[in-house]
Length: 390
Ligand code: NDP
Ligand code: MG
Image: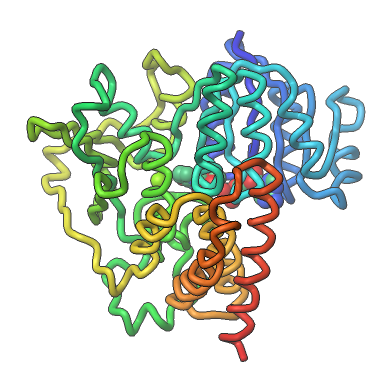
């Protein structure tokens, strides 16, 4: 039996993970499930999968969780510390699927305990890539990508040597506004941005797909995960979202990963790695699909994307600042405080201001320094947002 914990169990990735586990319950011993506001789902899944402990991120929801789990023997807990403590429980495999920087700490704890960490929470690598990779290495823990592009690259590298890799190309659907003009994008609403043409995902990542902040995060994630130079990373717009990534080798050959837009493929690959098992995903009929299209992203319509290369150039804490400012800008956009294209402006201004402080950028990366930088960047981003509102 594989002992597993799922952080962010009530979200889109968490639910897809549970779907796979539910189909083969006898193979898994579920230890911890964590969620946020969706107490009913958390309690339901904890009971169904007979988890040891269920944790909500929000202390004010603890009583509701306790009530929902009364008489089951499942421990109920709440708060970020309780989530980190739940990550201390020994397991073989952990799904890191909390949204945002809150996903970093439980992932680090799991790695310290030597668990295999299936990483959907890309913010961990963007915010503290060096720390995450070092922690995995020092504890002999395996890190497996779940983001579809990174799973695709990982699969395209099987049996190959990194020294023969020339470039990595990740694809982007172009999001909700891929056919919109800059003018139209300026006026786009959160409701419009939250519908994705191809993937069914959480609200925040869907809006990040429309702005390509998601792709910017993924470019940085690529650099951190595969340890390649920023000039080796490319992005192509591919509206069909069927080729998830390509690895270009020195001899000119490219290994492209093609698969359905169903996250259960990448989650299942990480769950069963190094084996492949039957997964309940669509089998593609490329003869019927007929065409796959690719183009270069338009920098005027996706200003967020370019910022990824600025972040990689600055290095150090720049990723942490970038992610924190992006999370704030996204909150402000969702709250109708700033416009769609203003998100990139807020992040760029925050990055510009804070990257002038070399002491901050080059500080030793620990969980504490990352948290401090994150807090500072959120405050500065808030100032930039207020300035725009006024
Ligand atoms: P969702 O918003 O659907 O789910 C997020 C999960 O985190 C939920 O369980 C939510 O609880 C919980 N949560 C929310 N806020 C907090 C908090 N402050 N502390 C702890 N837990 C919290 O997100 P997704 O599943 O879409 O994405 C999860 C991660 O995976 C993100 O990093 C995303 O970028 C990445 N990812 C997602 C993909 C997708 O297809 N969805 C694809 C590739 C990567 P609740 O819902 O109960 O409030
Ligand atoms: Mg992705």
